[in-house]
Length: 292
Image 1 (cartoon, rainbow, N blue to C red):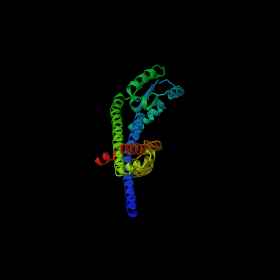
Image 2: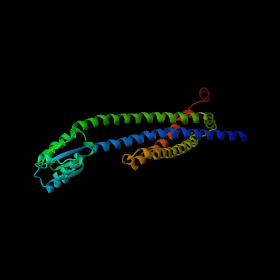
Image 3: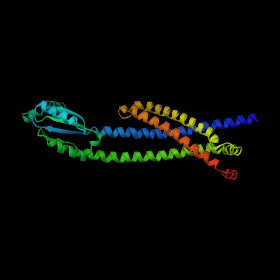
Image 4: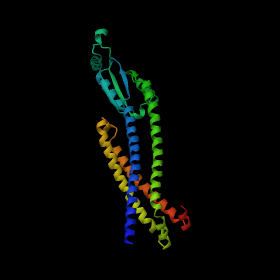
């Protein structure tokens, strides 16, 4: 009798370990995809915030007026950063880039003072920029506004389908993860279906029968989530040397959101699937249990 109980405990412990491992593997896959989606969103934001427009000012505009206009633009919702570049600074930059002095050919400084405006991510599209340009040109101090329309259109044509594809992949993987965890839990409870039926026959309430299974589900969910977070942390740590500047797109915020999602998903899905599986066997008769 004692040997039978020890064997049952050992089998139950092995099932729990197997369930933890399978759940951890599924949660790790989900965590990697979620982290990829969050970092991809940040990468897209960074790329869009690198979009710049050059607000060309009149040659007679004093530096004070140019700086004042820059402060006005900086307060606009579309402006991420505004930098004033005087004609002298523009000439110096041209000398450094080209290695020659343009004044040797023109006889005078060919550059006008300008404001370089780095856009906020949500305004980095040609529709928004066309409206912004029209408003800027109404200012008497502004002569012209220049930006690379084709490059911006090309960037958005690439980024938008990528965002949709990543979102679709995330939804698909959540469904796959749910299915895999649900099947693992059902197999674990299937081996104890007659124990459930026996408890029901001796008059135990459904709530009493469910309780140990739900406690196990909570333990499995928490342990699997902890193991998953440890695995993800190890993977990120090993990849850090091969991904320079990764901290710009993978911040503590993304890591915290991913960890929280792993814990919530691990807890909710294990408890929910356990509840469904136990209820399924509770509704079955002895004859039905033998047939499955």
